[in-house]
Image 1 (tube, rainbow, N blue to C red):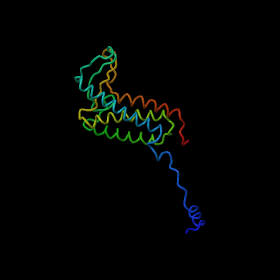
Image 2 (cartoon, rainbow, N blue to C red):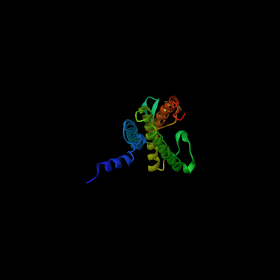
Image 3 (cartoon, rainbow, N blue to C red):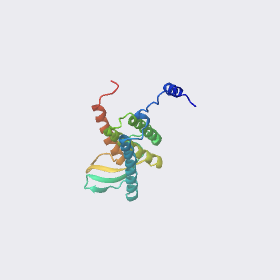
Image 4 (cartoon, rainbow, N blue to C red):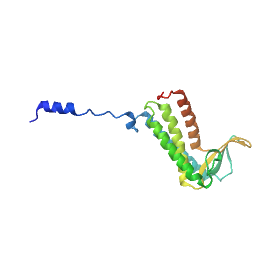
Length: 186
């Protein structure tokens, strides 16, 4: 039979269970649901839109969607935004950059408060775009599928895709949020 004073003494000596910090459970809460929903949903939307365009358009032959302002023009971009290129190494270099950026974005997510939906959305959009274009680089040596062709007449913006739109909107939102919130380290 155990002496009650011994069990009390043992429980007093045992260290209390440490509460896990919120960062230790990265897949719980609204922040994570928003982020992963955007990454998976946005990545799927980008992938599906590119496959539909590839199956219905001939490269470099524009199809008007909204007058001359918006056209679908299938092109394969072996470089990055605005034809940035590293020559024959572009596919590898931009794939590594996209992967590293996804890791950075995920780390930023882990440092984001669970109730900060705006920052989770911004990070999710950028990550969705990075994943969408990374999948294209992995699946084809031709490069990333671009097809959104905006402009008037011969004055056209760079041809881009859904993933590029996610990256742009997410990066702008993230910049605004980071500019508005003071640095907690200060």
